[in-house]
Image (cartoon, rainbow, N blue to C red; front, side, top):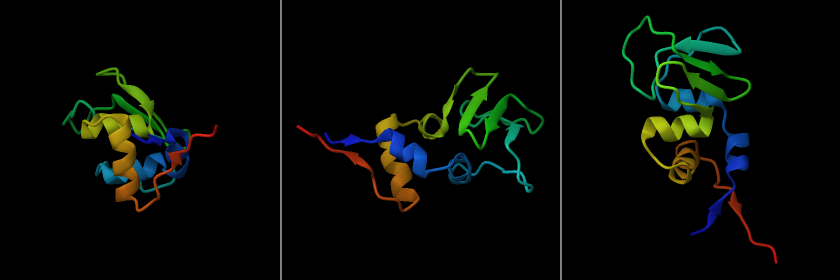
Length: 105
């Protein structure tokens, strides 16, 4: 199986793009971070603020379920996919080329 360059995927996709794909409500004003209900454990309370996202650093953490990581990890967790498949899916949905690692030798 060919290997995806995960670092390149993370570099060409933003947290805001991932949140848009997940239909997560984004703030109207430019903000570095946001808080709300967690899409990973599918909390439904509109008052929940356990999910924290830093948009510029592409990081998230849920203080309820304990999930944390980068935007590729978030997409994989919410869509219930392995990171490899999530990277391919993100590239396809955002119409970006898949960055493959090539063997040198």
